[in-house]
Amino acid sequence: MRIVSGKYKRRRFEVPKSFKARPTTDFAKENLFNVLSNLIDLEDAEALDLFAGTGSISFELLSRGCQKVICIEKDFAHYAFIKKVQAELDEENLIPIKGDVFKFLESCKQQFDVIFADPPYALKNLEEIPSLVLSQNLIKEDGFFVMEHPKEYDFSELPYFLQKRVYGAVNFSIFHKKENNQIITPE
Image 1 (cartoon, rainbow, N blue to C red):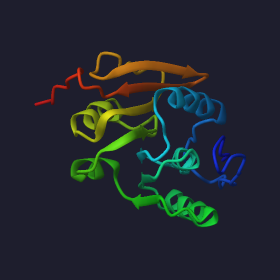
Image 2 (cartoon, helix red, strand yellow):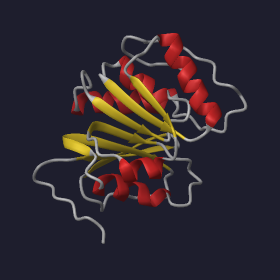
Image 3 (cartoon, one colour):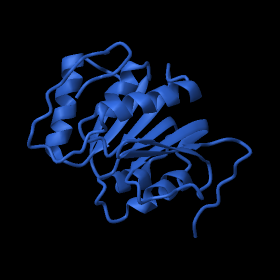
Image 4 (cartoon, rainbow, N blue to C red):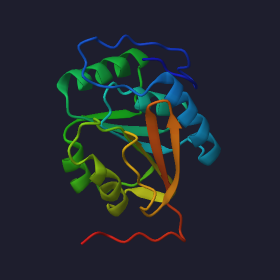
């Protein structure tokens, strides 16, 4: 795992080969953050990383100036790896939580400038994640939600949809919460 830019630029961390996580490729991550940097100033932003895996996105957000990142990871080995990297970087602005993303989303009352979700592509209810995140009022006004997903999914009909970016086999749907763009809560 490599951190692309910011204060931890070029730092590398060896991910155990036994990990089941499919980390976002450096190519896709670099391109996504180039897009995000033109959309939002990450300096002092608060972010949420769902299905954190290796923590690659969380550490990239922190490296680029986020003041706080909460990352949620269910797998104990992945969570332990995130804690190990956090200790190596002496990073106090990361709050790793070992837990289920769906339970976290049900109880979360905080809002974030940026939310990133990279669920396992085989997750049976993957297509529900954008609607769930968007309907929970977790995104601050003028904030962004980024969903990494397989090419089979199209979220362009959902409220706040801004654009889809494709980098090789990696697909990102980007949502932008704006004042003029109302969301309808599912019944």
